[in-house]
Amino acid sequence: MPHRGRVCHGRASPGLIRCPGGLRTRPARGGTECDRDTRLLAALDHLVQRSPVRDRVDPQRLGVMGHSMGGGAISAAQRRPSLKAAVPFAPASFSPDLSNVQVPTMVMGARDDGTVTPSLRDTLYATLPAGTEGAFVELSSGGHAFPTRGNSNVTRRVIPMFDGGAASR
Image 1 (cartoon, rainbow, N blue to C red):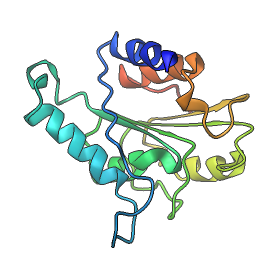
Image 2 (cartoon, rainbow, N blue to C red):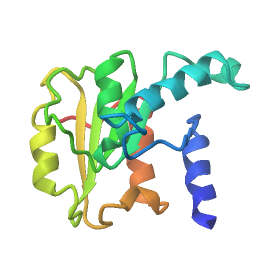
Image 3 (tube, rainbow, N blue to C red):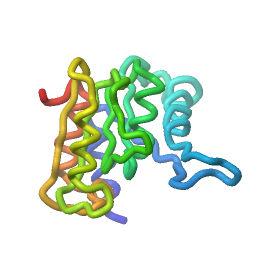
Image 4 (cartoon, rainbow, N blue to C red):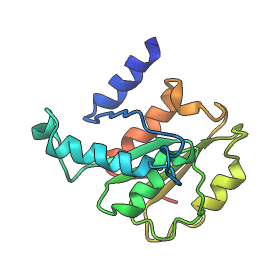
């Protein structure tokens, strides 16, 4: 798919490393919950501890992104408050409460997403503590799969989040 190279380059050029990892969207056999947060955090641990690029990775500048139910980004941020940023795309949560998130968080979705509707995202974002840096981005279109299509609107907003901060509330 030709657009994937552009998206990866766009994210990698400012010093971001993309670690797609075959993250499961359904529980593992015999499991009862999705394990995307565990896999995201394991990927970060591997990146800084055992990967061939570990000497070029700043362990103080790690963050997570995930798609659909936030792809585990919300749970990863709750479990590891030392993360620099979390960007859940089209987030929903079994427990719609971000009150214990301390990581700067950008909630992003598309207005025409019929799976994770704007009202679900609004409700979730409203629970982010006032003391936690946050940003809410609603794209005018793109549906539920908006971050999977090499969307420059996504890249343009996400990079600054990982480079030092979100827009103010």
